[in-house]
Length: 232
Image (cartoon, rainbow, N blue to C red; front, side, top):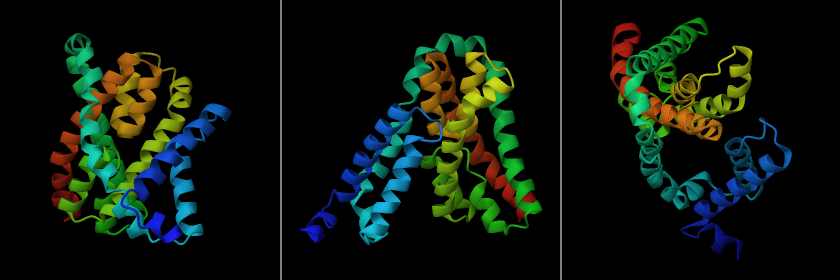
């Protein structure tokens, strides 16, 4: 019976969705930032695979549908942005400047920290796309010669951390403007940050959605430049 369930074509899909729903209920029950649903569900999933000795390849193959849905789900984030199109036009220069500076700072901070901690060139390249959505980051990492699986892990950790600490950061630095909040979350914490932005408000969600798109494009352009100029 166990083997039949594990070898099912949809085992990974059902397990992932079930654990995420459970994690959402845990977050709703205890209301702690540390209990981020993505983080909790990931840890629960790892625990299930380890306890029942389920090969990762088996899980991955049966959860492929989630990977397929990743790109259209990202595209759907354009909907709240479209609803705030007038606001975007009125603040276009400030918005583009904020996203560009955030993207450049993200790339340069990774490069500088990588040099400080004496990481190999491959590891630095692997971490460069950490602040963009997974669908784009995987391609950027692969094209630049990075380790794609580590890139995905870096992206997920970045998103979860941004989601968890965003409100505290806004309070500490007295950031109250909805556009600033949305741009910060989308540029630094991609789709997971956008989920937090949508919780904060419609404007925050729209600006965060825009940030994902623009930051992704800028990263695709800038990573090869940084790689060839500074890393070699």
